[in-house]
Image (cartoon, rainbow, N blue to C red; front, side, top):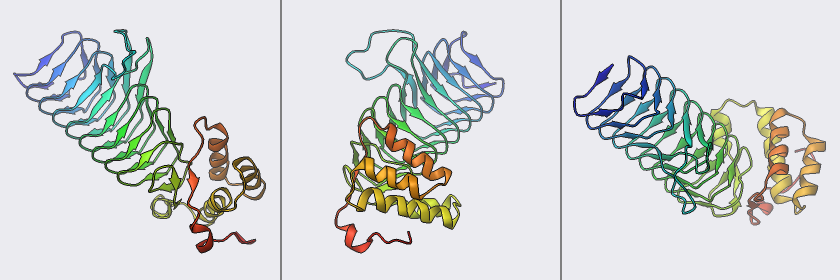
Length: 269
């Protein structure tokens, strides 16, 4: 283990032998850090934090701090972080706010500088939070979503698989899987570039395009639109899309009406 002489590391922390800990790092009691981790200058790892293998933590990152919740009382809660996550400068991630609860981060995520993950969030895998993207409490982000710089996500919102949020957007309702949101409360289109980069077959991308048109451009209410999608389209991606919408508690973003003329519904899909 390589620990800088100015670092303050609790003897009660469980740290793998090959972890590198930089200058002025503070690691509290009840912290676990797995093999291959590198922790940069001035970072603070708080009690109740578990970090799995091969994570990179840059300068002045705070992981597992007390939640910014006025109702919070000092209780034992947790932050659980998976493998191969990267936390750039000044990222903050808070632990759960209720006794025994956790903020959970999966694998292979990239948190750019000044991004924030609040208490009790669920961050799945292969997600990017760009500079100064802010997630409020209890937000859930599914696999391979992309949240652009200065975007802010309201508490309890859910962002679906491979969805993309544009720069500076306030997200106040759920964004279904595979969709693109560039304005507050609006899905502007489906995430064409993201789906191509993910290697989804053309046939699946066509189904997602058709699902987008039915839900957001047809004029049907959400219930009827989802029923129509389910009858016409049958891939596992569409099944996930339908289930996501049906499970939404905040409701999903609306479509952009002026797109209807440009992308009219057709019978071929």
